[in-house]
Length: 337
Image 1 (tube, helix red, strand yellow):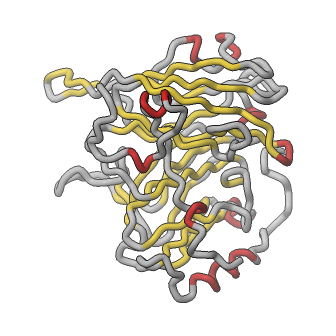
Image 2 (spheres, rainbow, N blue to C red; image 1 turned 180 degrees about the vertical axis):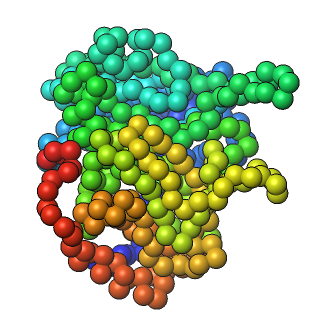
C-alpha cells in the first residue's frame, strides 16, 4: 500500500468540542477551534452534542456525529473541567443500547445502564448529561481531584445489562476532560485494545496513525474485553502523569514507553513525533507477546516535516501489509463478526 501525502484527512482527525454558538448554527467545531486557555465559555458552560448510534457492515455498530457517519471508535469528545456536556443519543438501530461515560459525574437517569432504566430503545432519542468538576484546594496542602483526565465512553445495554455485545461490536470512544492551560496537540489518535483486536481490527488492517516530524501528537488509549494488555510505542516515551508530561525539573514521575491497558482502563499522553529519533514507520502494539503475534500491532508513521515519506518508510509499510499472524488461528476477537 502506497501512502499518498495528499490524503491528510486520513490522519488529521481531531477531537470534537461543541460550543453553544456551533449548536445554534447547526454546525460542529473540531478540535482545531480549541486553543490553550481558549475562551470556550464560562466555567459553568453547558455543551451540547448529538451522536447517532448506527449499524455498520459485518455486524458491527458505531457512534457518529451525523447520520451515516458512525465510526469505530466513535468521535473523540473533549471539554474543559467545570463544564457540562449534554449528549443527545439517537438510536438508529433495531437494538437496545446506551452510552455510559467514565471519569465524569452524572445522575441515575444518565447512568446509561439498564439497572437504572437508562438506555435507548430501538429508534429512541435520549439525552445523557455529563458534568465535570474543577480541582479544589482542601487546605493543608491537599486537593480534591477534579475531572481532568483521559476517559472513555461505551454502550452498556446492547446484548445484556452490561453492554458486552455493544462493546465487542464497536460502540465505544474516547473522552478528554482538559484543565485550562493544558497543551493542545496538533493530532489526536484513539487506540482501543479489546479482545485480540485494535479498534476492532487485526494486523495488517489495524489503524496506521500519521504525523509530521515535530508535531505534538496525543494518544488516547482504552482497554476493553476480557484480556489484560500493555500498550507499547516504539521510539517514543512519555511521563506517567495525567498529561504524559513532567510538571517541573524535579518531578519524580517515571518516564515510560509501555503501560498496562486492562479492561475498563484508559490513559493518554502527548509526544513530539520523531523527537530524537527522526521520521520513519514505528510500531505500536500489545507487548503480551502472544497478542502481538496474533495481530495486535499497528503503525505510527512519522513523515518528514514537509509531509514527504522518509527513506525506508514505504518499504516498512509494505512489509507490514504482508504481515502474517503467527501461531494458532483461534478466534480471540470477542466474536466481532
